Image (cartoon, rainbow, N blue to C red; front, side, top):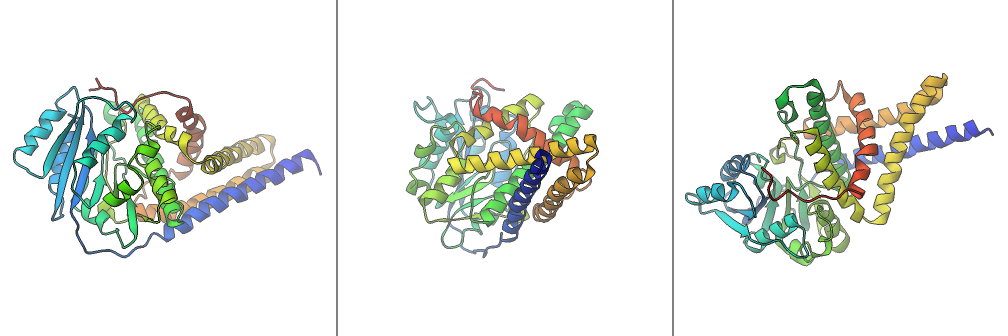
Length: 381
């Protein structure tokens, strides 16, 4: 057997591994069904805010019109240098549901956002804790749709938070428009992984822009104490902590009313900084999970490189068959995920986005393991 034949066998094996993972996620997406509950416990919406004067008012207005009978809004002003505190106080005057919590000094041990969220949770009264970010716009049935997923035995419900158009295109360049399209696709792809894994009872990922869990779950795992070593991870690492250390079940909310839109980063630099911060939580994933993600993304890159090499050398079958299997599996997963998340606008550009996704994970992903950063600069505007 020649060396080339050995390589071919390896690549075909890689394609089989890749397809098994992707089709497994598709199966998980198909299992995202749960019984809707009608009970309506008191809910606390907790938001950590630092220098959010540009978006905070919009968030508060969206929270005020939530179609849910009993809830409070707790906004933690984390040493903001702009009008964040003033905006909270303005809304407090006419809405007793709104509470303002001020962080005067940083924690000596806990990262800023986890510290702010912990302060908000400590001041809350809800049986269910809901979380979103200051730059989000939760729809009127957001709280209701998340709470309805709390079947008996369910301790945490993750949600979808798509990026909407309008962020990077504000300067009008073609590059920024294309970049925004990819950023939206990348978020859709991440949600697909999160939802599919939860459907398989393998909760790995979630977003803090649409997240809810029971207060007793937060208390049972000791809050953020066990994951305070990571700047990020108030969502992913907390989710994994609940899965590993408790008997509570985890659900993914698929009702469109639970989808929380937000604007994408305003520049390429902001995008890289944000994604690097998010990837940094991966340093603290269990070793087996890190090895799995490394193997998967390495396989994805290898299939692309083998396609290019086969096209250049004229060995078309070895180029087309492995990559074709990958594309078939990706298409099946995309179709199922797009139907659930009501995101069909990538059908014509699906392959191009997938290739960009491979390059993105190759070059941006590793930055989270080596770069240093903070949640938000204290003097950000």
